[in-house]
Image (tube, rainbow, N blue to C red; front, side, top):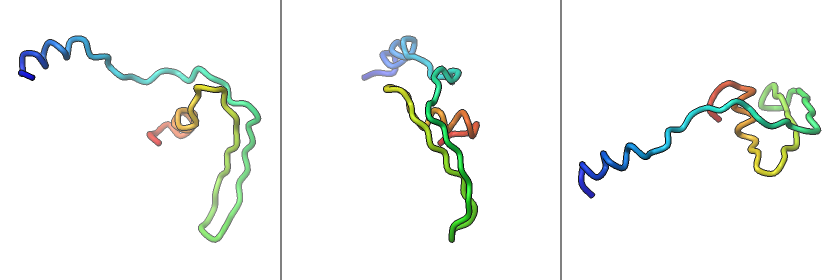
Length: 65
């Protein structure tokens, strides 16, 4: 592997990026409460096959999960 080869490969690399949320969660339930550790928020939902909960949570929280 040489530096010139790496430079050539780099031009074909795919750039990652954020895409808008394109799926709809189902059976959404939200509850809150307090336990010995403090306040909490519980989210329950179902997603279609191929959809990821972390993607939905990132969109809700607007931060990396």
